[in-house]
Length: 471
Image 1 (cartoon, rainbow, N blue to C red):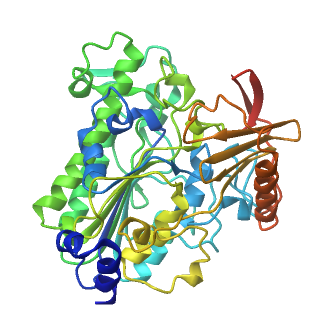
Image 2: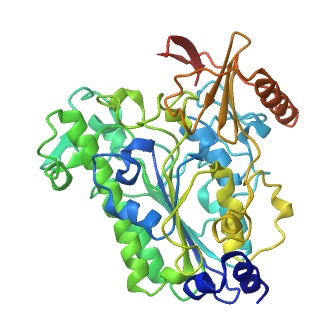
Image 3: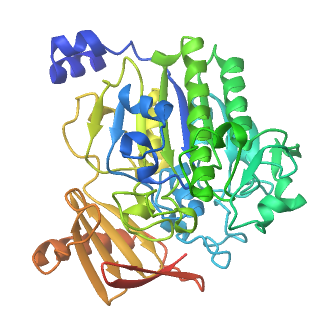
């Protein structure tokens, strides 16, 4: 009843009649997670590729316009997301095979002393399932089944989306020698639990089917479903079903890529449909996000991250700002566009709140529970600052402002809301703000492991700024 009273005071009686939450109860949690899906690759964010099912999550709840991951590449971003903590705390800020987390022996290792979302949900009495790309090591002690998940069907990291020997498959022409799509090894990455299984259907469809079946098996109890799709990450492959949806796209790679995104959207639709079928929509928090921005290598025409510049691997908006949508019918008012910065760090505490857990101090989270900011009980800002670090390159988000530091050689300040293309440097006009944001970063860095460096680098040149990014 206290929660009802708080919402009534904030939203008023009329709104309460439409969005009055139920008495405290553990909600199901469904987290649908794409791989390398850019900010501008979802139609509700401006894409010309229709994604009606993904879009529906925002229509039924919230579309975040400043949703961020903690890194511009997949492995460190998953460390931060899965723990609700900045991965720099244990030195995992780069994707390079030569740079491991502090004290670990493999670059993918999520240290065993770090609790995962699944640990938290399982401790709250949930049945937990992961179906897709794990990428946090599958060695004994690191495997999803050792990190809080009751069920796992998926891959350690990357693999083929199709078997090239199937009829009516389409493979991007510029990468026919990609080992994940042309060799037997690329077809051997799928596991059920710890046992290998065959790839017999489009990988995205298989993962969606596993998620749907998990809901059916667990509909009578609280469950946490995590579906980290591998698409639209390379190799760029699809089946005829999705390829023929885009006959007007002339470029072959872009047409196949559009088919991959459409397959993810169908997969999201299948999971949402199962929730409706079982009458679970008002008992389920659903979030959709991506692990980082789209990669430049297959972004034909550089449109996948628009209106942002940059791509996966760099700290421009295109690398770290992602589609981020949430629904919880009856609990979170629908049709919202939320513009204040939020982070993947916020998933863990938000999921624990859905599990009706009040004391989460044991997890030492850097994120915050987003629900009070969305239901009207907290009019404040979830984060005063958000931070990024990839080797010598740093970024800070503070309100509408974003500071970019490239070693000691370059300082750039952008209004990330009004200037998403990061084209107008305001650092000389706002020196006190630059100083304030640098000081905030310095305070943050004192709590982190020392910065790491990589021998692998990629160079960008945007707005006449040439930058080497450690990856």
